Length: 342
Image 1 (cartoon, one colour):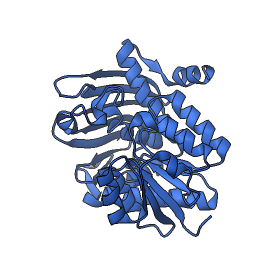
Image 2: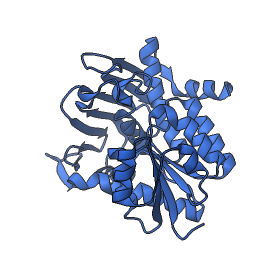
Image 3: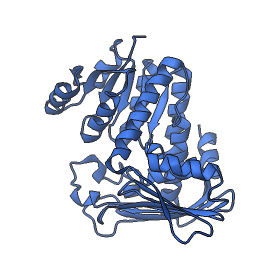
């Protein structure tokens, strides 16, 4: 392998640019290529980040001077593109969601395991400084026994959606904000307190222009007995926050400002642990892309591998299934049924 990991960015837009900017800060990464059907997007990417421009995915796969692929393509393409990349020996970084079902995640994990390539998933919220510091407080016993978690990630993103934008459709965005926003909070809960065992969810199209639903909420029950609440909209002003309640303390993260607050049992008010503002997203993206390159070169596994990506998808799929059926969904049954169907 070359001295640096040679990345190709597939599926160009504002988020691929964010990832490319983050990758450019790593001394282990070289941006080798980009791929889009849009000539304008290809030219803009090459002018800003370098590398060569490609107009087909096959040309990226067949290039032996490319070590790894960063996928920021429509959700429904993740599976086929991951399988093809693994078949060509390419390491793969996939923007969330890893896929839209547990079954597809399992296929992707099996293919990359067989090929011996790294599979990483872009669930970057857990890496943001406020969430990292909160994790430290939790693991140090600062909140005692976790009893309740609340998270909301809302924006008016859906109000600008039109049919030519891929996220507009129900097929690409089951549960509306679930695959864009809420999946991050599902991953944080998995990271902080473990996966839920039972989920009851509601997903509805209330008044937005999208074909997909625009409001979602869910109640979660964890193995420990703790409960959780996840919610979000695509049709309201931006508001993102996270509350964690424990027997010995409370954590509140105001994601809009990147501020972490902590209140210890017996204290009269919250203390401000830190504020990271606009730096929180770049920090998290730089960490995940640099780690991806390190894993490729050092033969290690990323923190958010395919298995962590699948665990987050399982929560999202359970919410959609619960909303569709009107019944609670056991995650163990979901994972078991997908395994038995393979």
